[in-house]
Length: 120
Image 1 (cartoon, rainbow, N blue to C red):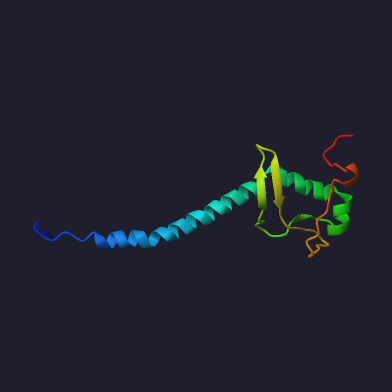
Image 2: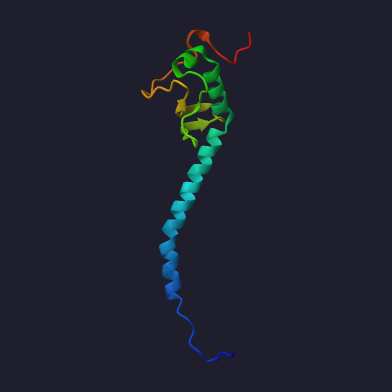
């Protein structure tokens, strides 16, 4: 099989248009992956693990939520700011137990000096 050396070169204009069309798709995929990675980093942090531990050991939380307190979804979404370097942590996530409440009530675990991490 032989090719002629004097043949016409292919046009590069079609390749440039395809690149421009796929750029938004690439940006969306990278953005979604970035959000997933950041959320995974938050969900596996010591702050979230400590909060779940505090919920599990709090008598008030167990009275409201029941036993087996864990994330409400298989892949939890942790919203809010978690800046441990500057000490700014303001996160929220859904949890469930055997008596899961759907009203979104906020439970203050540190009322009356009840700190589960303080050694007595």
